Length: 337
Image (tube, rainbow, N blue to C red; front, side, top):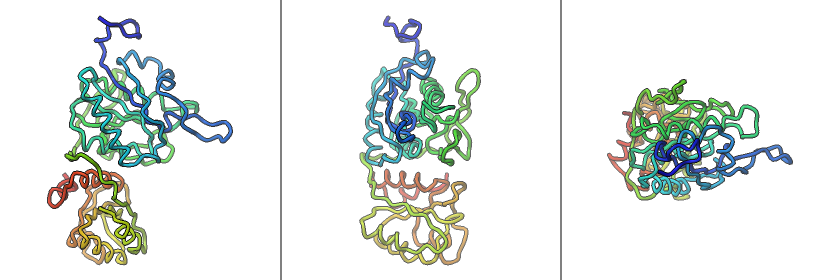
């Protein structure tokens, strides 16, 4: 039986986890000339800083990219998703870990979760501090991600995100702080917790959506409504050929009156308009009947994004439009469970 390097154990005794490094803070170092973080580290460099990682699983490493989180876009996410699927199709691979920039990790992980049919674990991780900084969370986040992907209990839980010593469902995780090590949250809480025995699953995701599609359509614009917002940006989106719009309304999904005519124009042009909230927590609902209120938005034909934040509602619409989902089927994707 073949041996792995960690303590000479039989290779088949441990799960095989494939780790893809795509960039982000977890792969960065501080440039001494600028004192700013820049992409610099390979997957092998990062793994070397995580003692005991190879005792958990048989690892294969892939330097897929070195993209900072803000450089990611939906088409790149789709290409990454196809690569993940190729590894999942390998019967020798038990799970996949993806190291990714935290700025957009929730969007990429959500797209993969929406469009990938697999029972095998896929776990995203990232870091808020580079490996060279004091108190870096990079080693622990990668360690926990591999522990999770190697855990048979992780199967059938969909795509997960391991950050800040939490294991969150991709459909529920949201980045809520710019610099804190505990920057990510789920209103419902983690799907798994950490204790001395390792990763312990406590629940399944409340809702998992699936979109059958062979592509994505990134022509979806996201706009935030503020006091006095008009329809100028919405009309600009229509002119530039947007296929869909997501609007972060105020409160439970309300729109300033001056923006309403532009929304009507979008709907008349058969452009789906999804209403979310700029609040960051809670669900939108057609509660108010005044001009621009949620009830009017619903009557006009807007879709309501439930508890999805704007950036995740956009990813859902990007996937749905790629799959030519429309009408009642599209509405069902956004309806609150």
